[in-house]
Amino acid sequence: MSTVAELHSPAWEELVTAALLGTERRTPPVRTPGREPAVALLDAAAVVTVRRRAGLRPATALPRPGIAPEDRRPPLPPAARHRLATLLADRAAGANTGRGRRGTAPDLTELLPQWLAAAHRHGYRTPDELLPALLDTARARSDLRPQALALAGPRALWLARLNPDWKFALRGAAGSSALPDTSEPEAVHQLWEEGLFAERVTLLAAVRHRAPSDGLALLGSTWATERAEDRLMFLDSLRGELSAADEPFLEAALSDRSRNVRATAAELLSALPGSALALRMAERACRCVGPASRGGEPVITVEPPQVCDAAMERDGVVPKPPSGRGARAWWLSRLIEATPLSSWAGPFGGRSPEEIVALPAVDDWRAELHSAWCRAAVRQRNGAWARALLGSPSAPSAAAAASTTSLGELAKLLSTLPAAERAAWVAEFIAAHGLSEAFQLLGVCAVPWDETLGRAVVDALDIARDAGSYPWSFSGVMGLAERCLDPAHAERLEVLTAIPDETEGASPGAGGYWSEAFQRLVGTLRLRATMRDELQGERTEPDGDGGRTPDDGDNGDGDGDGDRDGNGNGNGATAAPTASTTPPETPPAAQP
Image (cartoon, rainbow, N blue to C red):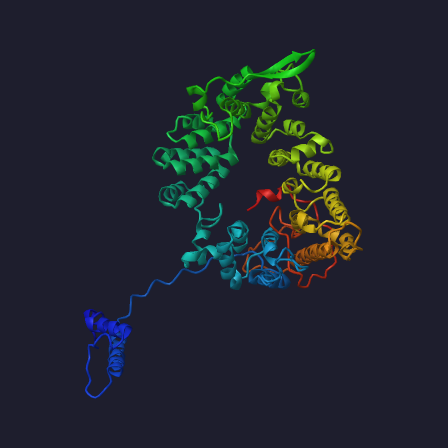
C-alpha cells in the first residue's frame, strides 16, 4: 500500500506539469522505448492514478447527526402544499414582458411572503420535502426570513446546523429553538458570553420580552467590554420594551465614549416624557419658543440657541449640523423634538395641540417648528399631536404638504393612529387629492385595506383611467392595490378590464395598457382568494400525540399583515372572491 509521502510524490506533480505544458515543451518524467512521449505520459498517469486511489486510507467517519426534532403542527392541506411548491419554484419568473409592460399575469414572487404569513397564522408546518427549497429561498431573500423561519419550525433549524449555507436560520428568530430557555440563567449566560453577535441580539430581545429588568441586567454585565458598534445595536434593541426603569442605564450611556451611542441613548430618553433628560430639554426649548402678540393676534416667537454648550451636547444635541442646515436652526429642532409635547400646554396658556399648531410663527419658523413637532409626536406616539399636525385630509394644505419632503413625516404621523382612523384619513385624502401623492401614505395602512379605503383607491384608479394617461404613473399604487385590496373587490374591478374607447387627447394605446393592468389586478385578487381557500381546506391530524390545532377564529385570509403579497400567478385563480375578515393592525411598512 502506498504511503502518505508517495501519494504526494514529485512524480505525480511532474506528470501534471508535463501534461499541462505539453510533451513538446516539457520532457515527460517517464520514457518508454518505441512509444510516443504523449502516450507514455498518459500510461504513466494511469498507473500513478491507480496507485493513488488504491493507497488512500478511509477517513474517520463523522458522527451521525441527531434525530430531527418533532414538529407537532398539522401538515398543510394538499392544495396548499402544492401551492407552496409552486411558489418556491417561482414559475412566474418569465411572466413580465419588460419595456414597462408587466402583462396580465400576476407575479408569484410577490405572493410568497403573504402566503407564508397566512400559513403560519393557521398553525401549519412546512412539508419536510420542501424545507430545503424554503431555506434556499429565504437565504436569497432576507425579507422572507422571519415568515419562512416561523413556518419552517424546528426541523429547519436542525437542517441549518448541517449546511453552512443556511446558518442564517440559526440566528434568525427570537423564541426559536436555537435559543435557550430564557428562564434558565446558566444557558442564557453561556450564549450571551459565547454566541455570535446576531444570536446575542436575538437573545437580548427574548429576555427583555420575558423580563425587561433581566434583559437590562444581562446587557449591563458586559457593557463595558463591548465594541462601540455592538453597544449601539444592543442599545437600539431596548426600544421594544422601553420603560422608566431603563432611565438610569440610559442616563449613564449619555457619557459613553461613542457619539452614536450617546445620541441613541438621548433619543430613547426623550421618548420617556418623565425622564430627567426630557425635562432638561423642555426647559431649554421653552426658553426658545413661546407665545406672543403681534398686532393684537397671537403668534409664536422663536429665538434659537446662540451656542451648543457641553450640557446640550451630552443630552444628544450634535453641534455640527448636516450640510445645508443652519447651526442654530439645527440645535433648535433637536431641542423641540426631544421635548415632551405635554410641556407646551403651560407656556401657551392651556391651548390644545390644534390651537398651538394653528398659530402663525414669526420669521418663517413655522415649517421648522412643525417638522420638529412631527418627530416628537412620532417618537412619543402622541395621537393628539399627530392629529393636530395632520389636519384635515381634504384641506388644500394637506395636498401641499404631501407634495413636499414632509410626505414621509405625514406617513409617520399616520402610523401613530389606530388602523381604522389611519385608513379613513388616507381615503379622504385620496378622494380630495387623487393618487399622485398617496403611495407612501397607503404604505402605512393595515392590510387588507378596509372597505372605505379600498373603494377610494379603486375610484381614483378609475378616474385616472378615464383621464387617458398611461397607467405607469400609478404603477406603485397599482402594485399596492394588488397586495392590499380585499379580494372582494375583484367583481367590481371586472368591468374595468375591458379596453375603453380612445377619447380625444388620450395617450395613444393607454386604454390597452390600463386593460392589462386591471386584468392583472383582478387575477391577483382572485388568486389571493384561492390561496385563502386552499389554506382553509380539509385539515389532517397532526403527527404524534398532543399536537395542537390552530384557533378556528384565525382569519387565514392570505392577506398578510403588511407582507409584500401583491402579484400572484394566475394558475387556477378561478375561485369566486370572498370578503376578508377583520384586517390586522400592523401596517405593511412594518414588515420585512
